[in-house]
Length: 293
Image (cartoon, rainbow, N blue to C red):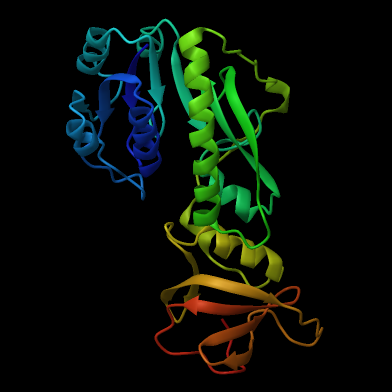
């Protein structure tokens, strides 16, 4: 089975490494030399070249030059794991088995942007790892392989990412064999159950202490490294917060946003409900008790 592989992020590299380890026939790799979109960008050319796999950089995946290059590789299947561009019909129709994509949710639920961030920020207790056959929609094609991934309390984006990677690596081992032997199944998505998450904006990462402390803690976990971090707007500056914990504090006479306790570098702030301890932050000057954030 001849495979053309498309990817531009760390997840792409991990998947390509797995395919190489499995001794699959990867006949070509498409990747980018730079990206201003992906915080976890990865150029796959060094890996491909080290294994003597033909590799080509692209800017726009649907360009005629890229289309011709893929056709020249005569792929049986195309794997696209980690690309923030929509693949158009001419590429979708090249390989007999189609184009297999990936989305880390339980499709058809939660299509769209920033799936790890939204899953944690919204307090979900489970998400998924889904490989699917791409169509002209966004994350809407038939499912090839899907596994449930539990989100434990206190899990941040990095730990959820690591868990999803471990799950997806096991899935690849199974469905590649099924594709090779033509024993795979296509499961149609129930479009009536679909929803799509929007692109996260900068405002989504700003902490509002009028919120419940639990929701603020989820936001901080969701945006922790390798992402941009949740932030507080304080004295005209943006202050990043990387770690926190909920503190039970139900006094009805303290306004949200008031600093009520300092413990070494930790800052305890009253929230709309309970309080939150900011454990790892980037305050140059620690606010005083009684100050408002």
